[in-house]
Amino acid sequence: QVQLQQWGAGLLKPSETLSLTCAVSGGSFSGYYWSWIRQSPGKGLEWIGEINYRGDTDYNPSFGGRVTISVDTSKNQVSLKLRTVIAADTAIYYCARTLMGFFYGLTDHWGQGTQVTVSS
Amino acid sequence: EIVLTQSPGTLSLSPGEGATLSCRASQSVTSNSLAWYQQRRGQAPRLLILGASRRATGIPDRFSGSGSGTDFNLTISRLEPEDFAVYYCHQYDTSPRTFGQGTKVEI
Image 1: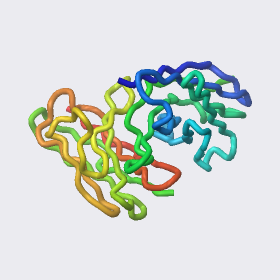
Image 2: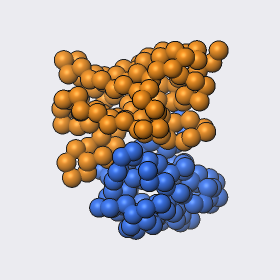
Image 3: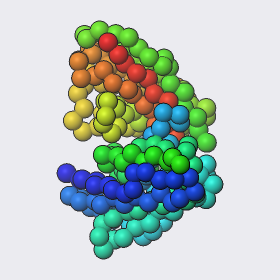
């Protein structure tokens, strides 16, 4: 059974960089994409982007180039950086597994989520 | 991007009753690349339905999905106490992937 363990700073000031990491265990790492999705009261569920083991990425344009998702295949970890955060970036951030192949793009398993609050 | 609009916003029902939740897409979702998730309070979303009508592993058969193109439904035939939660539709047909705003099923 795949497990997604995520961690990172939970309280940031405006203009700082959000940094989260997700460690994958209990299953294949190279056979999936790995996504970041956030959830806020204002915007609901919002797809941030995804990466595969080769480092191929796809980002949501609504983040205006502030996002970088990276992968460390030696540790089976995926990381998210969101630069120049503002209060509207306050949300629960989820790491999630996304399928390749016939059901490409389908997210089938979610991490526990990390609450990130942006406040001065 | 594809905008997903869910209705109603809230359904007030009793255990044993049936529920039908709607999800309408702003443009056609090809290959029926539409999923439904359940989110209980304080938990991450859980996949219920993929490919518009296929139940995910371990999902009870009281949950069913239907629809194609721009109109999709999630039906819960007989509500169990653990089914009172928020339900989201999600299109994974095109990037950026998008979610509906959710339907809350409450007692």
